[in-house]
Length: 271
Image (cartoon, rainbow, N blue to C red; front, side, top):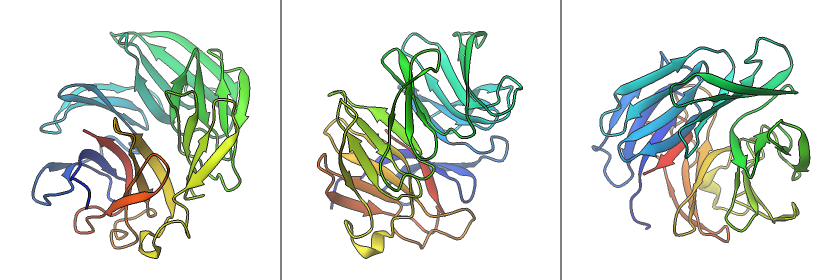
């Protein structure tokens, strides 16, 4: 058994945010997300502070209590929010500029004033992460890498990508992707070639029941923690194993669920 993890966790099925200690079911807290629908993105932005993107913008919370410290609520269709080291915030989503069939990345300064906005045609986007001077956009069946103006540079794809959820550029220049309904992880090298996939049905014990690989996090020791979302609704907690830990080579090390508290784990932030 691996050491316990402490994490923020979005239970999409019950629309709740939790502070979880996987080794102590009585620890932590939970709060309702009814006022912040479709919360998807999580980022630590300080010792005691986290950024949470939701459908209309983002909030900043106190990690210890779950109290909301700051709110930016001004759009419809937000799918990702990401704070840059210089204090700017990138907000990504669909039709944020009031247009149709467009993907937008909006830049806010430290005072949440809009300073830039870029757009490209598209009908789907989930989490966005910076990559060099541009972005990695999860656009359903492929990852689109763009420049700062959202002009395409290359596509990363693997058979089975469906609603691909998150892509992250690694220190070696490679890219790690969660495949959404493909229910596997995919690793690409710096040149964009698919190196391996892992975590799929047949590669993990049957009780894991891979369904939809959503948010993941690469820890400092190389372990990869993945949310195995199990569908919409409040009664999915007994399906599969919802928090998976792999080693750097993609071997499953540990799996965890708490069906009494969590129906369907989607967003995670290991603390």
